Length: 223
Image 1 (tube, rainbow, N blue to C red):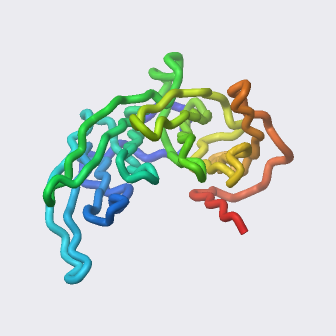
Image 2: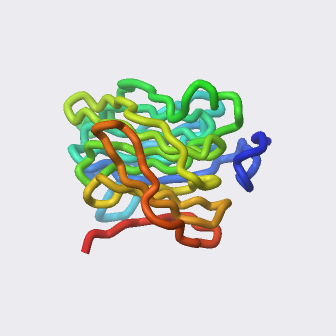
Image 3: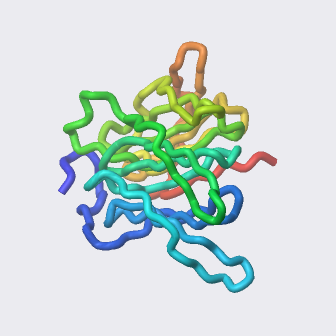
């Protein structure tokens, strides 16, 4: 069981548990994160018959619990967040004559060293609209980390790791201008809003909290 500070997060499961399913940007393969088995399964997808065929598997670190997989808009890089591992692994991706090829580029912590033994877990992972930044939220430390994204190499650089003024930030999102963010805090039943200053690499609380009972997901749509 995780230690105090992360609210009602459930006990670790060692059975298959699919937490996220995404297509590669070329629509060739379906990728399924299995947090219970610490792997990401890769399937070919036949759009005519609707059938899936197992093609490959990304083996993640033991007990890391891969939660989400997202692809950069250029289609060349995959980002896998690990709930218990509190990190984001980056892979290059290409389709080699009908075979998916994923090669690991690097691994990036979503927390500072002082939180590594406090039972923190990684929750959300979101790109900014222009895919220049990647944000991850962490329960336990109740914080967000924001990374810059190199669209040529896929590598990340962490710009900040700061608190969100709420308990268990189950989801986060950038506003379309990439200068504001919102944290959906499941245990404190609030949304907290921040102005993002990337010149100083800080976030500043902006406006009052909004009450949201046990929120799970936030999506911002530009009108």
